[in-house]
Each structure stands twice: as structure tokens, then as C-alpha cells.
Length: 88
Image 1 (tube, rainbow, N blue to C red):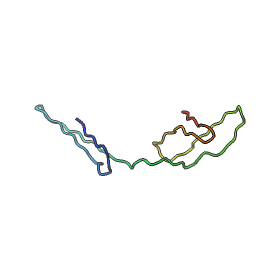
Image 2: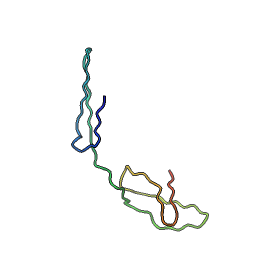
Image 3: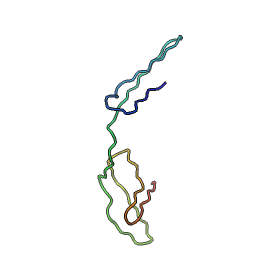
Image 4: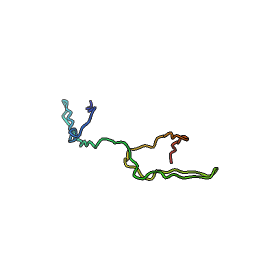
């Protein structure tokens, strides 16, 4: 048994109660459901700064802050070369 809400809205938030019964008795359980705001396009609060590096030396480009806790860093091609994401 399940309840599926395909297109959740703020009005779906609240307490849901499931009741079960048979010849031996009954039981129920409640849960609180909250619906958060929709995700938005991520935004940098502090961006990368143009830099140069001497050939053969390491280069690290680090994103310090971005405004969306559910943002993942993706591979983003640039006009001159390709940026390849690496996990820290």
C-alpha cells in the first residue's frame, strides 16, 4: 500500500495518518510532511578569479560559495579548453 503525490504543492504539507485493521485489531501511524520551495538555478555568491600558472605547476580552481545546498558541480566546457570536474 502506498500514497504517491506526483506533483507536490505547498498545500500537500500536513499530517498524514495511515490506519490498518484486521480481525485481530487495528493500528495507525501519523507522519508530518513538509513541502519546501522549488529548486532554482544555482547562483554563485563568490565566483572564480582569472589567474595564470607556470607550465608544469599545479593549478587549483576552487568554488568557495554557492547559493543552493542541493547543487552539484558539473563538467562545464569553456571556449578555450574543457574543465573537468574532480571530487575533492
